Amino acid sequence: MKALLVLVHGSPTAGANDAMREVVEELRGRGVYPLVEVGFMECNAPSIPEAITALTERGAKEIIAVPYFLHTGTHVCDDLPTLLEEGKARHPQVHFRMGDYLGLSPVLTTILTERATR
Amino acid sequence: MTALVLFSHGSLLCGAGEALEAHATRLREIGQFERVEIGYLNYSEPSLATTVEALAGDTSVTEIQILPYFLAPGYFVKRALPAALEPLKNQFPRLSFTVAPAIGFDTRLADALLDAAEGARESDAWREPLERASSSCRGVDTCPLFATPACPKGGGAA
Image (cartoon, rainbow over all chains, first blue to last red; front, side, top):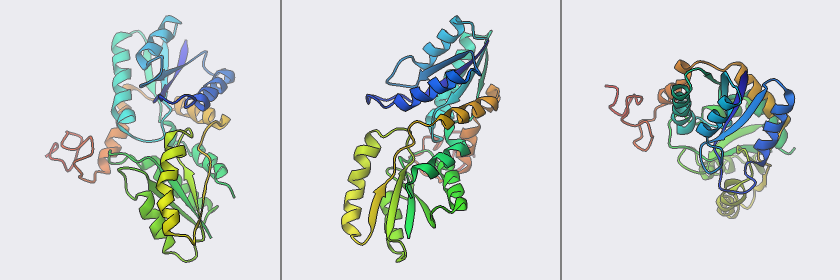
């Protein structure tokens, strides 16, 4: 079974993840992936390792991770690959892949043109 | 004329601006605003102040619209941005400033994530953003890559 794992920074601010959670609900509604889960780098639960474990317990044989990040920073460049490599080592029967981070999508340019008010 | 300034946090990592610079390039091509610039709060150049000062030197610019390149209207958009703008408003009273909403929720973000998942790759490609970052090396010792094997100028990769 294929799983989509959305990798999120996390925030100590209440409400900071609300829009992201709406996007994840939208993803679940699309029905492309039978399993859709969120894993946080910091501040919020579940952590990325916890989310990986939960997905494997629910029968995921393939985990496709997509970073919900706008920039290339040390998280995208290094921390997220490391967490996924550790997940691979812990769950050798699961096939892990990772997609581009969200900021690279031209879809965001379109959204930015609409956020601009004129 | 209204100039658009993409406002972002900034990063110590060389090459961290690749995505925002790509958005700025596309926004210039779209032509919705005659001028599109980037201004960072921290670390990266140009700073918001440097960008606003440069735009103020263009007499055709009468309004500056700040467009936050942030996922959510959190601390940086609600607190740090107004604090950074206040002295600039005082410095340039002839300019009017407006602030657009943060990215927030949009169903098309789900499309973008599904596209990213569609193109997902095996583990040998997971550090390509790191390789791209090091190709934008500025040789500054505050970059987390400085003096590591990934840094072209920091002495790591002789």
